[in-house]
Each structure stands twice: as structure tokens, then as C-alpha cells.
Amino acid sequence: MNALFRAIERWAKLVRDIGLIIGVPTLIAIGLTMFNLQSKLYDQQVAALKANNESLEQQNKLLSMTSFDRTAALIKGQKEVYEAEHEQKQKEIEELEKQGAEKAKEVRELKAQLAEISKNIEASDQLSISLAAIEAMIKEGKTVVIANEKFAHKGILPVPTPTGSPSPP
Image (cartoon, rainbow, N blue to C red; front, side):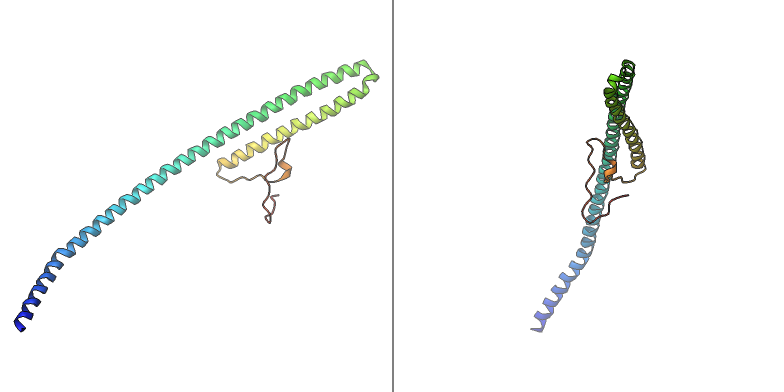
């Protein structure tokens, strides 16, 4: 029985030794393969994120350029219309003043309209200045939120301020 036990013990040692000789390098090879694979996957993720970031930056530049260009063109066109209307009303006032006092009421009405148009021209100028300042801030990378009623002008509604947060100055 002792001989059988020693034979089994020798075979167990042999299997153990073979396992160690073959197993350790195999585990090292598997570990290196997994590390290389994971390294390649991280490199691919970094490349994909960089490409996505560049794409988003270009999209932001395009959106800001087209948005500000259209807005600036709209404000400029609106100002030109106001200026043309301003000149027309001034000419009408001059004609009515020539016709005499009977047209005084019309003159007052036209002067009120002229004052309103002048306000519109001034508001357009202020919008242009504000737009240029906002565009400069965005180009500098600053975040701009307009949430104050004093910026509202002719159909442009202010951005509602969330409850519990202070309104900007």
C-alpha cells in the first residue's frame, strides 16, 4: 500500500510540475494579450472622443456664425426700414406744417409716430451693440444667458428665470 501511495504521489508531483511549467507562461501570455487588447480599445475610444469633440466644436462655430449673421442682418434690415419710415414721416410733417394749422392734429399724430420710430431705431442700435457683445463673449468661450425683461424688445420674450434662483442684474 505504501508503494501505491508513493506511485500516486509521484504522478501527482509530475502533473503539478508540468502544470507549473506550462501554466505560468500561459497565464503571462494571456495577461499580456488582454492588456494589449484593452490598450488598443482605450486608444480607439480616445480617438473617437477626439473626433466627436472636434465635430461638436465645428458645429458650434457654424451655429454661432449663422445665428449671429442672420440676427445681425435682421436687425440691420429692420433699422433700415425704420430709418426709411423716419424720413418719410419727417417729409409728411414738413408738408403738413406748410398746409397750416388745420392739419395740426395730423402733425401731432405723425410726430408721435416719429417718436415711436426713433425709439425703434435706438432699440435696434442697442440690440446690435448687445449682439456684438454677446458674440464676443461667446468667441471668448464664456457662457451667456439672457433672462432679464429689460432685454425684451418687440416680440422677443425674456427667458423665464427658474423658481428659487436669483435673476441676473
